[in-house]
Length: 314
Image (cartoon, rainbow, N blue to C red; front, side):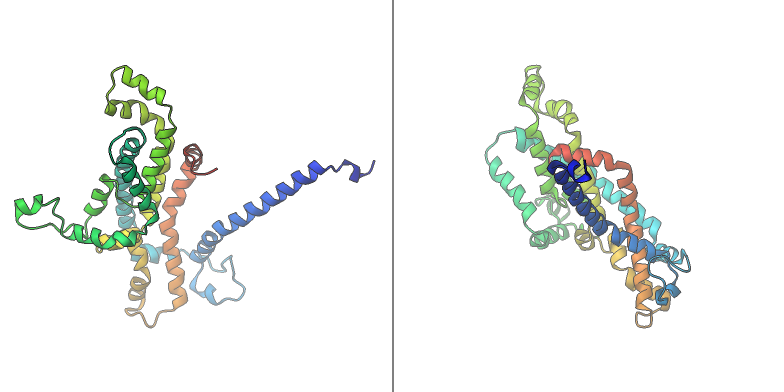
């Protein structure tokens, strides 16, 4: 018996599928990991390695000067603290408000609920720039429905503070809130109604049923929304640079890093090596990504399981 006689059509099909999966996984891994590996390689290079023709990935002169410069210019530890507090608070408030909204759309019947839910879905599709100006004007002249001018005689300017993020998170209007409400709505619709009806028969109210029965069963959706909310708020530069102009948070520090670095090095932006500027800027971006990478290493198993259970993929 030759080796060709042992090769069957099923084996060829199985090997072909394994090869296709290997190529797809290798391609996806390259696309995801290449920018990160490139930034790590750049961050540990000395400035002289930029002009060495033999240095591509592994530096000839290892150094941590780029980290020291980027951390000093970004005021890193204060920026890290402020960003962590902002992302954590908005994540908790957004998850709580979106869970309540999702439960209402999934289980409670009231007039106009379908129209309101269509509006929620529209917020996922509509670009945030379309509502930026009215949001900005409302926050600049915040009146709380006319109550504040009635008491104080004037409106309150909430810009350049954390209040815009807190208020939009409490009212389920924060960044990507429409998507989070949609996730909770779909998840609560998938929970059998018999569980909820049994709670009502035992005398539980709507609120008690939500907090005691439905919310503990929604852990996959909660974990998914919290992780998405935390990561997107951490990386957000659109709302952060609009609402916050003087606070040190990661996105504002990264956007102003080249200018601040040029001033830090030479006192002007005209005589600084642009390649070295790019090197320190890549190091700053790596420092901004580092907490999220560490977070993902600890919660990746819970995150993947939660995403699968909420039905976002597959």
